[in-house]
Length: 267
Image (cartoon, rainbow, N blue to C red; front, side, top):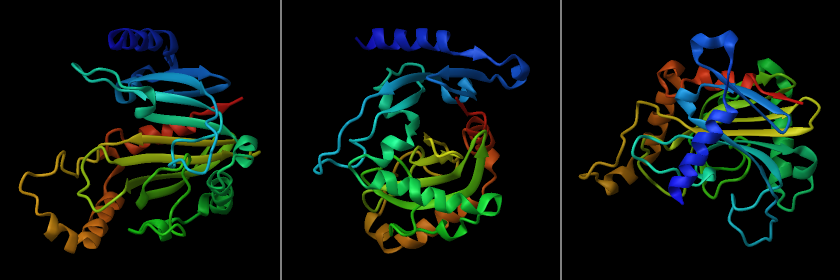
């Protein structure tokens, strides 16, 4: 079954990836599905698997992330040599929600995210999000993100206003956690949260990045008790590193992911 799934992904990659001839030096590909088109680099992000995701209704006793309105999703399937493909939802995702369905969804976190995002981007290109670039899990400090995650948004870095054709949003790096932990590579995410100017759609892109600043694993001799006593300073130091690092040193580079966002066209 796993082998068949991997073969299916490879076939989908052949069918869905159309080279962008005008940008052949950057090895970009284009995908179009359900009226949504964007360009991306398959060498950095793997194959793209689109799908129409049915609603999972909110019942009041479900953890965040396990329920959502119906939406269109694009999973960025990255399989290293020797690895087996996982379920698509476990990879980086681009999700496009209809604002009308989000507004009527049972969990108030969804319409609140749209309302907050609209307020935050109202300042246009002069928007300043530096007040959010601090280690804090207070809900008044967090930046919008859908669907909700069953963890705290510990910090936000490199937050910037980012327009795309027909819409605007906020791009930032973030870290979510359920406890006090050493941050390792693969736990920092690039995210874009945006809305179309006519407020017809909400766009959420969430992709893991490699910072080249963090350890790949927790050291065997890690002193957890000592770590707890300096945790807040550790978060501040890590955040400052992310905020001051050159975006080109990240993998994928910030510019490549921003370009993906700005290539989006929703018809």
